Image (tube, rainbow, N blue to C red):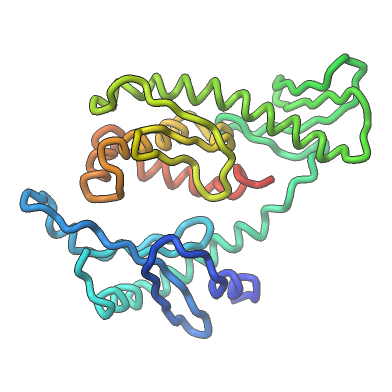
Length: 271
């Protein structure tokens, strides 16, 4: 394994749970987070599934093991060891993807994304009264009224503002389109937009949504998935089995769509 991949595996990926574990694979050390399921009630339908240790590797190379509420450290470690090669391989693949994503320079010819499609960025100086950003004919064109010392910074600010403006419109449209599927939601939830480095969205305990403006770069089905995911949290404010059953009920193919979004996350979130 290359040094860059080894460093990615060994690096402290930040605590997202209070419980963590360590797995050795060859010369590499893999850190993983442990999420314990809430104890199931007497009416739990799929008891067999609730006893499984589910292991996921995220695009940011974070490894998460979702386990039964009473799973012992030995059981968790055994499950991790059984899938060690799979975990190592997925981390390596995500690390390699990250190495190919270079920081943006905000110059003509770079790729920009909107609603799942790729557009070429075109930057030009124009004599208009104000700087503008326009999407047309396969290009995202930025017209600057004057050259500045920080040309890239100026272009980046204009492009990000354009994404923010489009996100407000598209998210509002998609939220209204999804609401008929979520019979448990009363009224129209409020939402605000905030740029986040590792999250597409969140839902407060009061039912308010927060969405990442970079999500507008993804296809409408990916946007719908994130919105439905957060709306499901209004009914189930955790990732219990009930939550996943509810999400499957309103979007049966959510796994496929999530995988598609995860696969493009590095590019969509790249600034």
